[in-house]
Image 1 (cartoon, one colour):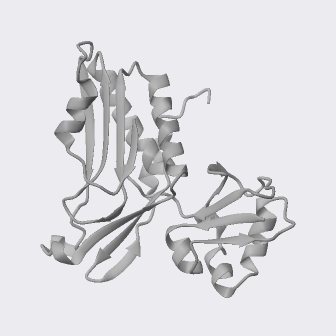
Image 2 (cartoon, helix red, strand yellow):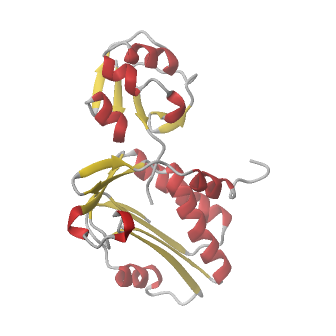
Length: 156
Length: 82
């Protein structure tokens, strides 16, 4: 399931809903991404900081659905969930949740890593950091591209 | 007519989130050349395409992709979600 939303989400409820009513799930792995304190020197002034996430409505959902479908092709997943928020968030806020259910843990762990790695480089989201009234667009990181590429198939 | 969408610093650099372009261009490369000629902001923001990503009808493409009337073109920086 894919959700792109401004609203916050309840981690416990989302995880519970993913395996509710079924007894064949043996492993459920999840990743929760949070807004970090970005102030230099780790200065403790969250009131001056924000992270605004912009996205491309339509293409975002399309890309997340494609990434999710690819995870289901590669691993024996019984259920999966991607929630990504947009709008203005503050340090400590939840940004993204991916969760994968499978009979065994290896598939659940790997599929979560895959979903995050591909999401970061293929889903059209952009972060605008604000610190003390100064906004700047976060640069893409080469390490994210490298992480995404490790899932490329040799025959692809 | 082509609808062109801009996101993140491409949007703030050009000063528009989208615009409708009347064009005879049949390739994305030719369209980008026309966009660059529209204003100084366009030419500066779209100067280095190696820093940008391109999509036609919500699918990633390269500069040599063909375009047709009614297409939705999007130009934006590398993504930084997650």
